[in-house]
Amino acid sequence: MLIETFILGSLSTNCYVVSSEKTKDAIVIDPGLDFSLEADQIFDYITQASLNVKLIVNTHGHPDHISGDAVFQEKYNVPICIHRSDAASLKGLENVNFPAAVLLEDGGLIKFGDESLKVMHTPGHTPGSICLLGERLVFTGDTLFAGGIGRTDFPGGSDTYMRLSLQKLMRLPDYFFIYPGHGSTSIMGEEKRANPFLTS
Ligand SMILES: [Zn+2]
Ligand SMILES: [Zn+2]
Image (tube, rainbow, N blue to C red; front, side, top):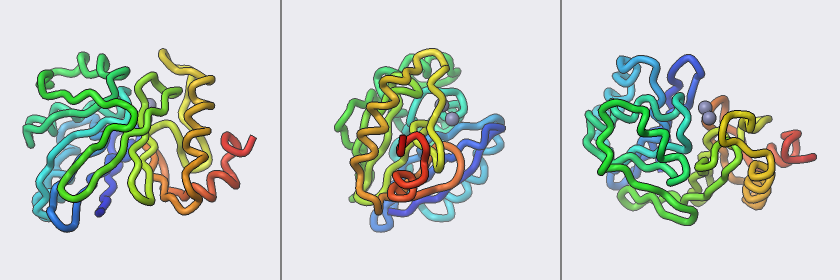
């Protein structure tokens, strides 16, 4: 599994292009954009790497993660995947092709070529926040960051659910790499040791 990171928008959202090295099938996770021109660097990468984009996946429905959905959908004509509890957020976007949206649920599989990621529902930051689990890595959206966690004081946020979601993540092995929605990557063992929201 190949992962390329692009930092987009004024909130420095991590957009990940994840692809199969074997089949070149790919997904785009969280294409947040302030300007559609920001997408050009990602389009170039996808072209140069000869990738076939199969899906757009949103870890949750906040604007800094979904604002580029329409630009990518227009370019690649592929479905947008989001947890059903955050799906209403897409309604605020212009030019999104709604029948093509795929509603995700806990335990679902996102497949691209010979690779797949499993959906783990982790509400708390938003009702429909998800993490995406690979064999030894996890995309955590705004649920877990290196040294921190996502805010729970936005509409739909919940401290109680966030605690339960973090407990789920704590069960992942220490060697799991963490790819968050903002900031640098980390590994689970380091977060269990040093992240104040996981240790207390
Ligand atoms: Zn967010
Ligand atoms: Zn965010």
